[in-house]
Structures are given as structure tokens and as C-alpha cells.
Length: 239
Ligand code: ADE
Image (cartoon, rainbow, N blue to C red; front, side):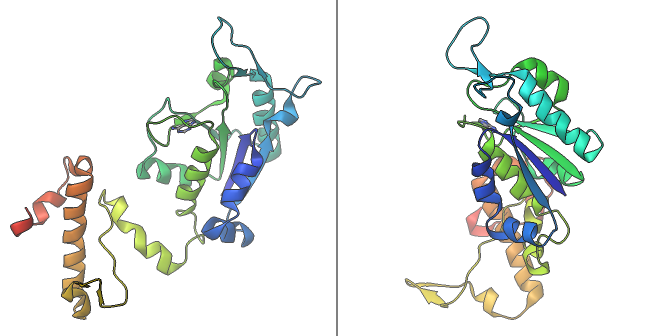
């Protein structure tokens, strides 16, 4: 999988993706993240890529041509038209279904805006997907791009070890992860749930599933709407 990030701040992306699991995956050749500085495609001597908004108003708008040229350069390099994702709060919020869909691509271009946004004409021309990472406004798209790369990378073969990948099934079922415990067996007066010490893996699996449903119902009931999980667990005193 190859990510191409168009940004005015490549160091923001590089600092994040070259760390931890994504950093390991890049080093081992399972994926690549190429940053492209949109400023390199400036049409001006000053190397600026922004200008005043038509119609007035606060802030600056990113010009269409540098963005267009940056996308074209990637298309020429890879010899095809890849999906181009624009990170913006004006979009549906990213979820695991969309993450998996994007993970099926061989190349993904991630376009990061700044200031008051990007001239809409180039967005109309090059963007295939609009993605938000949450209902709040960030200073630019870079953190969104890093979030998207991290989430998508988990579905790229080889990025996660077997042990790491067996851990993330619950979100695919629209359930939150069950609670985890490690040593010591008793900490600050609270014991690890006895079932986890029983060695009975059928019981442990059932307990974990129930805990996932209970936790999801408490913290993210919206995920359980129309879900069959609620029918599978009797809550007893907790319900
Ligand atoms: N750029 C600014 N805010 C954003 C958000 N919430 N998600 C994605 N990109 C953004």
C-alpha cells in the first residue's frame, strides 16, 4: 500500500508515521508514505500557495493550481488515477467500514488543507472522497491524514503481527473491546475477574463477549442500534 500525502507541513506527517507500528511497517517495506510539499508546485516567485478569498472574509484560501499540479505529478508517477481523499470537517466521520474500504486500494492520495480551505474548483476536479475524523475543527488536515494512515495500515498484510491483529476483531463487529488485566492479581484492593484465571477458554470467551456488549451499551449505545448483540447478552443485576 502506498500513501501519498499532499501537505504544506510534511514534517507533521513524517514525525507520526515513522514511529511505532507504522514506522516498523515502512522500514520493512509493507507500506510507504510519501509526502509531497504542495509549496513545491507554487506558481509564484514567493512560493506562496494561498490568496485572498473572493467575496471577502477572514483568512486565506489555497489556490487550485498547485494542488492540481501536485496531484497530476503523482498520477504521472504511478501511471493511474488513484483515489484522492480530502481531509475536512465537512464530511462524514471516518469509521471502520470506510477504513477497510480504503485499505483495498493500492495507492491513496491524502490531501491536507490549511487556512480557510482549498479553492472548491480543484476539489471538484480531483477529490474522490471527503473524510472527517470527528465533529470538531482542526488547524489543518495533517492529523486527519495521520489518523487515516494509522487505521488503514492495520488492514495492510504484514503490518501487524499475528498477535497484534487478533486483537481488533471487536470493532469490526461494532463492539468495543472488553476490559483487559495484567499482573498483579490484586491491585489497589481490586481483584482480576476470577473467570480470567480459570483456564476455561470457552467461559473466558463468553465473559469477554458479554463485557464487550455491556461496555458498548454503556459508552456507545449508538453502535448497538439495530444490532443483534443486545439480544445475545442478559445483563442480570447490571441491566
Ligand atoms: N481538517 C480540519 N478539521 C478536520 C477534521 N475534523 N477532520 C479531518 N480534517 C480536518
